[in-house]
Image (tube, rainbow, N blue to C red; front, side, top):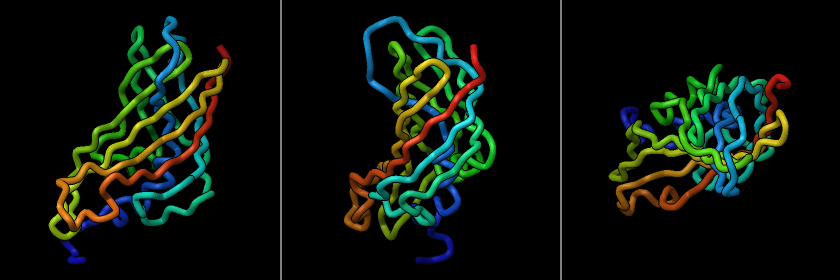
Length: 174
């Protein structure tokens, strides 16, 4: 790999733990009124499968203390990720704010990445989705990272790949 070409593994080398700290949410859920999900959360992450072969991703590795601020207007919400996770998301996706919908106690939030990557003749970006459920003041769910490619044969394992983290976190009692 040339020094000017940055693959997904290199771009995410410090991002994996940061992504794990992200508490955005992306859930398909009930058809009831949206719960009040707004608040300042402290999130803990655990790396699961690494289908996208991201660098510095150790299955089972954990990160704690990731700050996430969720704001809400009706059934729409955004999750602003702070700390080192913000830096990692900005480097990998060119964004650190997840946006999406709240349905009952469930949230589905996404970042469609715009940071261009290159692997040989494969051009790609990375996207992320959070699926979460609120129970009282606790939020739990999964964060998935996937590559959107140009379909070139150099994309190899990036095509259809998914790397996953589990997360949970709390906000101060309401």
